[in-house]
Image (cartoon, rainbow, N blue to C red; front, side, top):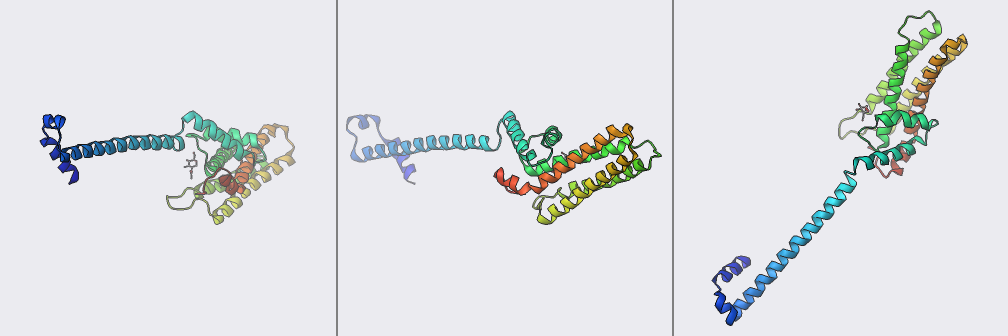
Length: 236
Ligand SMILES: *[C@@H]1O[C@H](CO)[C@@H](O)[C@H](O)[C@H]1NC(C)=O
């Protein structure tokens, strides 16, 4: 109401009167108009500054430069891998899968798990040729079991929104299943050791590699809470 009156009043002001000897109420109106304009002007400037600040902080926290995030997540991955027995294979197995880059320990755990699944499945492919060697036959069955233990682990952490990906119960199940998969591989290696064939050396190395991946996965899982704490993140 006030501002409407001000504008109406201003419209009626005769500019000549205004310059020579403006009546007192015109002067009051004029100074009110100046005051209102000043407030509007200052409000606009403050709003623009606030908007600029919000934009800046939003781009800082939510969308850093891709290269920045990539190097940042490489640092995070190094920290995650430092809890494992084989930090080099941890880093080299997870890093190529970490796209788009992420800093979440849960994602690193998931990627380590997936690297293990891929590795164990590729072992199975090496055994498609029918073999007479009983140790190799055992290995084929053990790989199947290991792969299914790892796959059910991967399924367990695939949750809908609102559901917790990691509860104490889930962590305990994951520990059991991944350890079982490792035992499968160990049993295969033990069986192969008894045959003493050097032709199997390369194959054994591949089995060992999958063992490393699973060991890394388990170590990340065992330290997941402290990794979330270290990164200042909340466990989902
Ligand atoms: C785990 O990673 C795989 C491969 O990138 C992806 O397909 C899957 O959706 C991920 N699972 C979760 C729970 O993020």
